[in-house]
Image 1 (cartoon, rainbow, N blue to C red):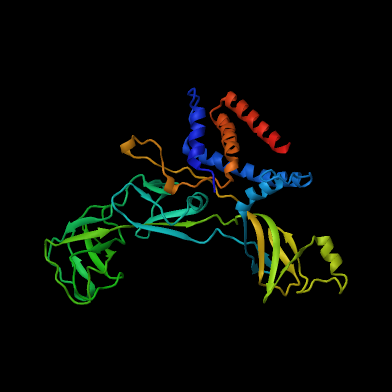
Image 2: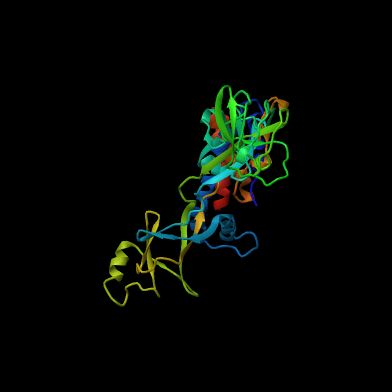
Amino acid sequence: MAINVNTVYQTVLLILNKEQRGYMTPLEFNKIGAQVQLEIFETYFDSLNQQIRVPQTNTDYADRVVNLEQKMQIFKTSGQATYANGVFNLPVTQGGSLTWSATASGATTYPITSISAADLADGVSTVSVNSVIRPASDYTINGLNLTWNNNAPRGTIATTVLANATPPNKTVTSLIVIPQPDILVGSYITGPTITASPGGAADTVTIVQNGQQFGVGVNQSFITDTPQTITAGDAITFFNTITISTTPATSSNFYRLGTVLYTAGSRLQELQKVDRGEFYTLNLSPLTKPTTSFPIYLFENNQLTVYPNTIQSGVSVDYIRKPNNPVWSFTSTAVNNYAYVYDNDTSSNFELHPSEQTEVILKTLLYAGVVIKDPQIIQVAAQQVAQENQNQQR
């Protein structure tokens, strides 16, 4: 259940361009969308605090506390806290290296399938071809699309052996002259199918390119454990491998702490939260000092200090996570005159409850008015947002 990012974007564009006031680019929309979603998300906590203090109706669908809980449950999660250096660190669902690989096919744009758009946007990515890191000026990552700006790895380059070559011990030496960047260091090579024991990917073939020798990896279907003769005129093909390695943002997706639990064997119990003053008071008496049966914790600097300090495992937490940033991703090719075409497969929707769609659009328009410097848009959007907030508090 989510708010479709394309619906919001198209609605905002429709209103902005009704009288040709201006235009919002996908990059601007994605940045503003993330800010709007976080603002609405943050209001849930103040609204819940306010609604708990007033009587609620028992009528179905009209209980505001229940409705707020439904909006917040999207972000409720749990995880194991990890012990290190005397404290427990909060669960981190982001982090660790993520990779995506593809064989270059000569295309300009490649869809990324195994890394989320949010991780690509927030993390640190490197793009390499055959394990050689390419400079950032060579490519652009938009949403879940990798687009080469220049010097793109063509991949799958077929050529012909120019001289006879006999591969002793899985090594071929031949004279092949092909200009860069068609064959890159680390490329894989395949040739005529050979029905003998295949060689390993670590085997090499020596290519003499423009008078300079360099080695490339060898696909198993080309080199074998027994000597083979490759005749002049046989076709061979080189493959370049594109790889993206992403290290997502090191910060946790933790937002607000809920319940802290301790599991010892089959026993599950809730830890009591205390502040420093309470902790010192409890430690004054043997009767109130924390034990493994009645543990306590301090929550400081986004870390849990659990007492007694003999507890070094089995601690888990229920918490509210941050919403993932919305991403309106697109393709742009010569076929459509390089216009932005929505790509549903590589986009990320707003994570907010569908009932927040109006609020998302209004707040996005409010920021859009600032971007395009249109005071009328700002005024109308601000009035509508204020009216929505007033209606929710009545």
